[in-house]
Length: 381
Image (cartoon, rainbow, N blue to C red; front, side, top):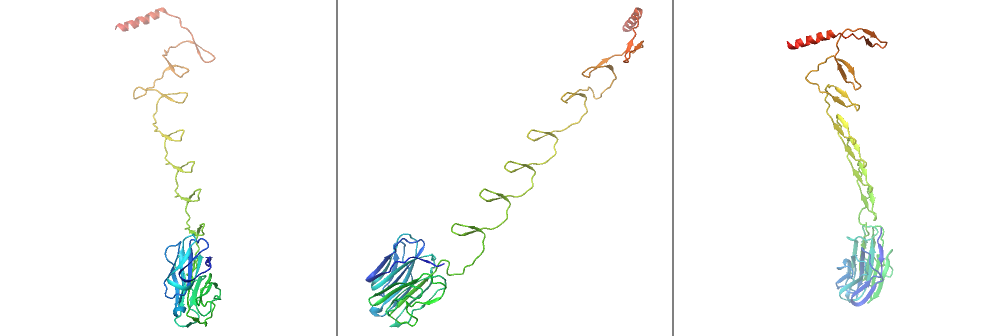
C-alpha cells in the first residue's frame, strides 16, 4: 500500500536572501512525514531546515553541490522530519549566507514508517563545465514515494521524468531550480533522475538530489501465518491458544475450570455437592434427616405392654424366678385373684353349662366345738 500525499502546497521562491519559509494550508496528521526540497544558488552556504511545531532540525537525506564560478555554483538538497503535531506548520530553510536565488518545496506524506523511513538516496554535482544525466536511484522496497530537486543551467527541467509531477521550475539569476515528486513508484527498480532530459543530455554546472521514502510495511518480506483469536477494533489479531478445559461458563463467556471427582452427597440449589460419608448406624431418623445413634441391649424382662406399645417392666426379687401354681380368677385387667382351695368331697349336681351345683351339708354344732378345742390345746403345748 502506497503513501498518501496529504498536503502539497505551491513552492516558495526567493532571491538575495538567507532564509525562506512555507506554511501548510491546514493542520498536520499525527503521525506523518514532512519533506522539504531546496534548490538554491549558493554552493558554499550551510543549510538548516526546521518547522514551528516539531522540535529540532530536519534530517538531511541527500545533497548535491556544483561549483562553476559565481553564476554556476549551487546546491540541491532534500530533508525530512517525523511530524507529531496536528497544528498548522511552517517550514523554514535557513542559510548561513545569502543566496542569489532559490526555491523551497514542501510535502506532507501519510502512511510512511515513523522510523528508518529512507529506502534509497542519490546525489550528484558537476565539477566540470558539462555533465550527462544524473545518477540512478535504485529502490529496494515497493511503492516508495520519491522527491527530487536540482539546479541546472542547460535549459532542461520543464518536463518532469516519466511518472513524476513537476512541482517547481524556476528561472532566476541565470539558473533553473526544479523539483518533482512521485507518490507511488511501484515495484522496486532503478531509474535515472534527468528532470525531463535523457541519459545523453548535458548540463552545465548542475547538481541534483533524490530520495525514496518507504511506505509502512515496505522494505522487507511479509510472512503470513494463520492464527486463531479475536479481532480488535483496529484489526489486530489477539492470538489465543486452544485447549479443551472442563468447567462451567460464566455470563461473560469465561470458563471456570473444575476438577471432576466422584462424591457421595446431596446437591444444593446452586448445584454444589454437600459431601456425606456413608455408614450404617442403628438409631432413629430426625425430621432433618440426621441419624440418632442408639445402642440396643437385649434382656428378657417380665411386664405388661401399654396401649402405646411401651413395656412396663416388673421387678423380680432375687436372682431366680419361682413359679407356683395358684388357683383363682382373672380380672378384666388381667390380674390373678389368688384363692385358697380347700379340697373336700362334696355332693351336688352339674348344670347344662358344666357348673357344679353344690349340695349344702347340714351344720353339726358338736363337730365345730371339737375342732376349736383341738386348736386351743395345740396352742398351749
